[in-house]
Amino acid sequence: MELNSPKPSVRIVLPAYNEQKSIAQSARRMLDFCRACLSAYTWHILIAENGSTDNTPQEADHMARNNSEIEVLHLPEAGRGGALRAASAACNTDYLLYSDVDLSADMNAIPKMLQELDSGADLVIGNRLHRDAKVKRRLHREILSRGYNLILQKFLGVRKFKDAQCGLKAWRIESVQPVIDQVVDDKWFFDSELLVRAERSGFSIREIRVDWVEDPVTSVRLPDTIVAKIKGVLRLRQTLIHDHQLPPDSSV
Image (cartoon, rainbow, N blue to C red; front, side, top):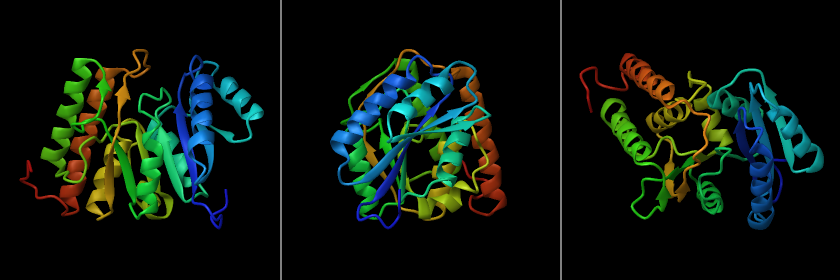
């Protein structure tokens, strides 16, 4: 993808860890959608395979061999954050958009997100908590998601976004890459840290309503993820206080 293309260019990233049963189907669905709906852009799909111990690497390579619009990046360590960091750092397109590999987020939001970048946004995120969003997921996941975002507001002073962990986001490479370089976390707190740092840097962050259907089969270990996110919040809070970006006595 060339930056001097007459159309904006976008890399669409599917982070994949131990997804041998679903990666081919998900990549095919995304490929069909992009072919049908992204004619206003030059685009390619990157499967960011990270630390898989099953046949995900072979399945991803097979898709790339048979579809010129698909590329594969193999990374030795597991972690969505690390996969997105690597995919963004090696990106020569105008935009990067990523989706969770289960495609729980409605892909119809993708063109709208890219249009927001076209109009000047630095970072666009899906919002499953929008009052008009059609969401199908288990009650405890809904409660945890809303509670987590309240924690970000209270302890990190978040004001510009409501759904930090939605697995559908897009950003302008030129603007956001310097912020990504500051992000410490390479796992599940990556998204939250990126958004908080971007907000503190004064970037334009916009949210798009996203319909969502939860995948009942997930490799995410919820207790470990919750602990990791809380540790991330506490670490980032101390960093912001140290850098005088957050009052030390704030529970904002």
